[in-house]
Image 1 (cartoon, rainbow, N blue to C red):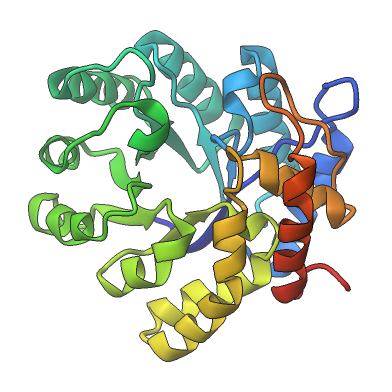
Image 2 (image 1 turned 180 degrees about the vertical axis):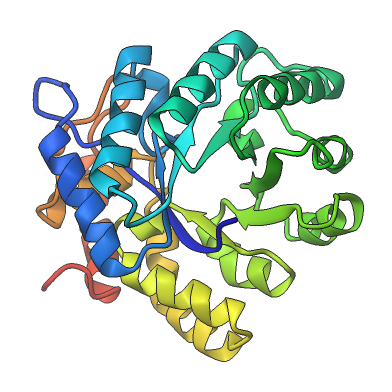
Length: 293
């Protein structure tokens, strides 16, 4: 259903911590202009963990309205409670989202059978295309390929965002999963190789600050022009690295602030990027050509 560079969009905030809907609209326009292939609203990078349910849904609804059909919108609707994931996914479906992205339940460490039943329940309850999201480094829960394969035959479970960085899983998922089940990288640094092995693109943090280059890189890789894709990727490697100097989305929100696109506001318990790391990230932004010297 989707391919290319899909931005995991930040949620801009005012200094008092409220969502900055004006800046949010400007970011949507920016991504449309820069060729981003889809927007993921309220994923990890969008601070889903610290938005309450009303705010979460307001951001999804606003992005859909602001996108106005110019770019697909994938709503982040995962939760560590199955009933809450159903509620969020239903609301995103009613708002007109093109698909939902559901992270594995975090903190409570379900079994593989629990993961299967969780995702199957959401899929059977809400008739919207759904993308699984496996990021064990943040959730303390790894959805194994065998479980993904079981879910891949559910009609409206259409793909997975794999943020493990383990490229061997691309081949394993392709071998085990149903025909047409789509694979998306959740790790910017390995995206070119991920696509070369059969993936369809990346749900990207780097695309927040270098959307045009990420789109070009993914399109080149999808077209089989791996030399060009790797040349672009080489320019972005410092960003892929330094946008994780501290926990995401701390560095990327600070980078967007340096670019004049959002305020530096971020919700506790996250805090603005530590002062000793700022020069390093500035240098990476300059080297990638997204910040003027």
